Image (cartoon, rainbow, N blue to C red; front, side, top):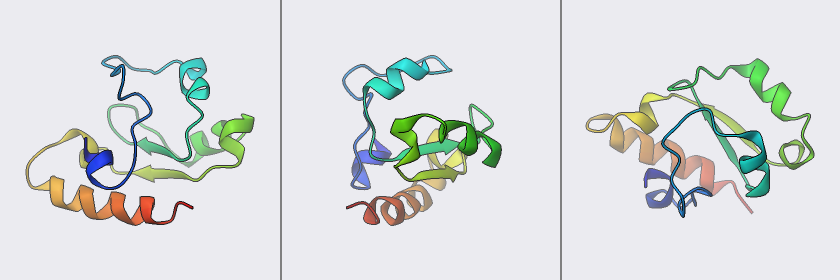
Length: 93
């Protein structure tokens, strides 16, 4: 919901994912315009961005590493999450 409140769209909104990892085939099938990789619950790093770039669908979209607590913790981090995500989504065509 933070993504949508910030101007984005969660490609899994219709069928929320409650388990990790998300299957790569499921992610590719949804053809996202942007990919957010967070440090929590999966510890994504810069090296993971390089691996995602090997897939055609991810080679041409923005990929952002963001602090996991912005998406997985509610409370004081919510405002910061909204600010950060609005900056990211604001850069989409």
